[in-house]
Length: 364
Image 1: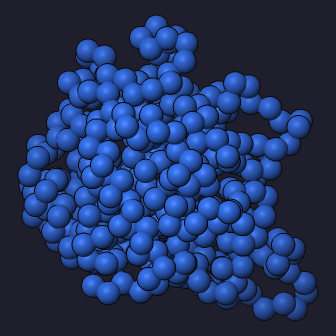
Image 2 (image 1 turned 30 degrees about the vertical axis):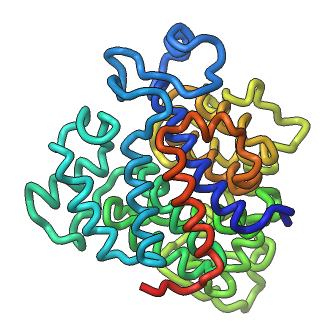
């Protein structure tokens, strides 16, 4: 177990995500790595301005993208309500985000709106559908980027963590595989906030939660992934997710990170190994690998995520949250905090949420 406090790890996860978001703002979505190096040099080590005619142009180094805007909105809702209140979250989205959008990509906070949020705008603003009908089929990490705050809030209550993340995810993304992978990431982050290591044993801890009924995944094997014996009953179906495989991914990535026969050098090339695109199945393995390899080095985890190009902003948000939860807020380099716009407000929100982590039940 980590020797940092749970509040320190909770605040570290939140601020790690904000830092990853702002770090990716300038060099976002370069799929030509030679072009990335031409514009930003051989190694990106700090916040940068977006280039003209690129994504987020007009923003400044250290500012948040729309993902950071929505994470902040989610965080404020959690802090002010004392936990997840779906009606309050939806009201804030209706009043604080959607009026700033017009349904096109290059628009809104951060000067870019992702597919799932554009779909949400169409359904809520144009079609006036109820929130129960707003989920779409985007296969990206946008739900993770906001629900990581729920994972931190309910780190000590895995069932509440899983339920609230699933409920929030389907507001914008309703594919069951995407929902299950989003819940799995939140479950991993929750264990890291508790103080567990991102190592080869973490998936066993997650599977125990499945067998105990805390996580809504179908347990398809026995303990330690042993096959069923003749005459064994079908394992109980704990919930909506057919396969627990998303819970097994982190330990495989952790094993790869420490295996002397497997080396990704430099580590930013993890983006080439697992893929540079936006889809969740490219992003999550890379984030787990970087967070496991640099479990005690927040700076390296985030900078290798950013320098890999492609959807490096999402990769940096995910890796930043995982790394921040492992090292704690107190071990995040001061320059990343001081260079973040409105850092005082963000740090205060992270600290307020961290204080609530021991409160297992929402009081709202």
